[in-house]
Amino acid sequence: MATAETSHGPVIAAAIAFLVGIAGGYAINEIVSSSQVTDLEREIVRLKDEEQRKARTGAPSDEEASAAIAKSGRAMLISECKPRQAVPGVTCTGMITTTTGSFAGTTQPGVLSFAKIDGTWAQIQ
Image (cartoon, rainbow, N blue to C red; front, side, top):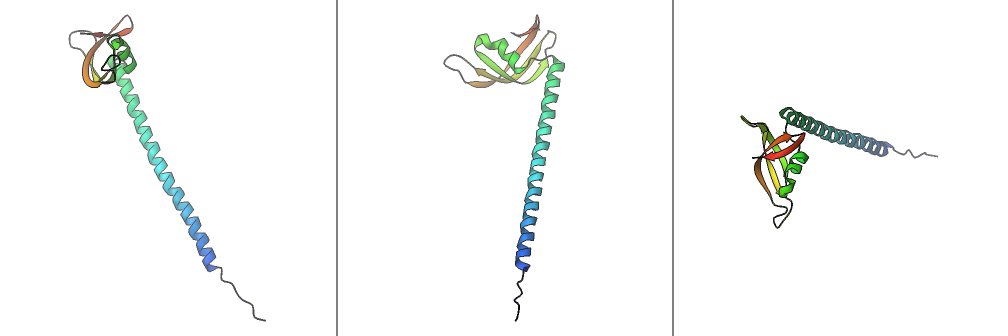
């Protein structure tokens, strides 16, 4: 009686290709994930540096600046603050948003000056 030999070659090749595909996909996923983590770490460092710079210059935070100008129906997202020359306080540039009235939601670039008075930031002229 003759025995029929079955060839397992194609099955083994398919299994190897499957395993290589899984490993390759995992490696690509790890590279992409690692790149995203690196980008996030850079952003964290940038934000920490920016916050330390603001603290060194004695600049108000976005929330403090917005609170200082809230009575005028505006809020501010600060880009940069510099110490004022010859008078106390800082001059800040950024985006000013109207929060009340018929122009509510309107945003435009602007420059405002602030000083810390009795521990609270206030807008000054």
